[in-house]
Length: 137
Image (cartoon, rainbow, N blue to C red):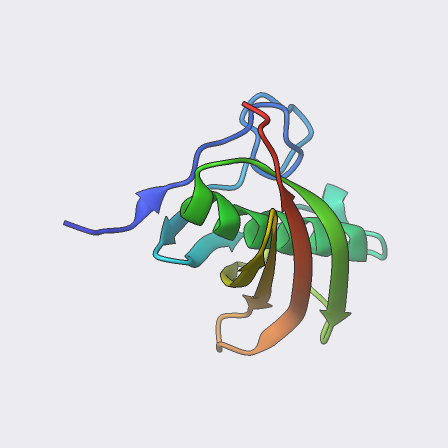
């Protein structure tokens, strides 16, 4: 039996929400301070034809990195700062894997990093984020 745990969905969230009709409905899972998910964008997520909009890629990285703190503290978070590096075009109808980890905690803030990998294991996008731990239920 796997020791990975399912990350809860926030219903209206664009990235993970299962009640958002225009969202990505991603399923995240976690273990220790690591979060993973699969991502496959659709053509309606593109800016240029066949290339996923950078804002969508940023949202996926932001969401995954944020969930690393949920694993550690059991509380939701708000994004304070986000740094994204787009290394290669992310293509629609192509499977990618997100992997992120919490790096450290300072008071009510945690720092996380993450990346989106193609089928060959090459990072196509990387990010770092700073998140505020909230009491949102």
